[in-house]
Image 1 (cartoon, protein in one colour):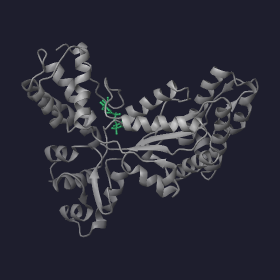
Image 2 (tube, helix red, strand yellow):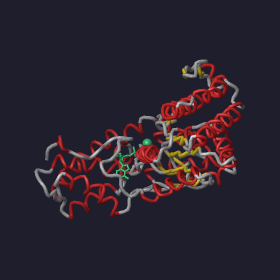
Image 3 (cartoon, protein in one colour):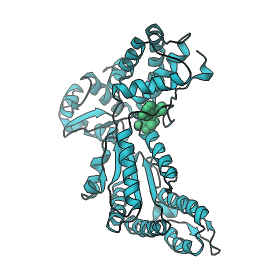
Image 4 (cartoon, protein in one colour):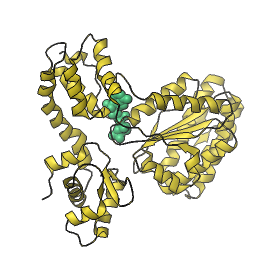
Length: 392
Ligand SMILES: Nc1ncnc2c1ncn2[C@@H]1O[C@H](COP(=O)(O)OP(=O)(O)OP(=O)(O)O)[C@@H](O)[C@H]1O
Ligand SMILES: [Mg+2]
């Protein structure tokens, strides 16, 4: 069918034509915003899950819900291994102030932020209008012990000005597992203050499965500061809906067996659902889409996923780390014991493999689901490794 009319959306962070199966997370999020605005406390949210389950697009959905509810919600911060988190937070706070200033004309009320944001290398000009500039080196060199203090001061002031104006600010943070321990500590401490003062600042973050552990390791009270909902693959009805609804809107239908096969091939993982949906649409000559259409498209999708989705991840690893992943995959799907991986590699002891394990975790390619276990953060990655890079 006509690729011009293809509704499916492939690629990281691209919102799907139908975002399905996330009602529970959205309900919880709306409750959070609603309660904070009424001066009640409610834990912020840390959403975690594997690659391609829809973390980024959920944060974007959260941003539009916040805006719809009158909250101040600047674009999500995407943390990378080299992100200047101080600067990113200051930029976020600044964007929130600009939005509020446009709405309410803050005037003199902006003045305290000059002093506060200067700690983050930003400034407010005397005239009240804000200007903003960063000296990246100076920010990076700022004593790390100060981040916690500076962030608390900034959040308190921002929370107060939001409350005076009957609104709130939500900080949306993607790929949070890449933060440094001091940054986790500062974030938790600042949010702790918000809870104690009942100020309307929420922090909603997403990341890989190791994220909840990293947060609680930084500050044990973070266990109560956040709820930690897991984002998983879709259940069957939601997966069907994700495929059917966009098609239906274009007067295109699926044969039942075609949909069944699509669920089986994608494993109900959102990224794969979109990838298969897209290719099957282009392959099918007409509606309804049949099982034969799906089977004809499947090898093309598999090739594309291997070349793009999986290979871009694989390329982040060094040769030694790649061998470690090949050994993991060779042991099968799902979590594997680090001892078995080391043995498969012919190492004398488990600790010989720990350098690779640690760096693969840092790079976000694997995680430890439990003590002494490792698994891939990318769904279906073990099969990819066996197909393309078997143990040599
Ligand atoms: N609930 C959903 N229903 C249908 N499609 C979805 C859903 N969530 C995400 N998608 C689609 O899945 C793909 C992956 O989404 P997204 O990039 O948000 O995942 P992610 O968890 O952030 O992945 P990564 O860890 O690689 O950053 C996108 O094409 C998106 O449109
Ligand atoms: Mg993402």
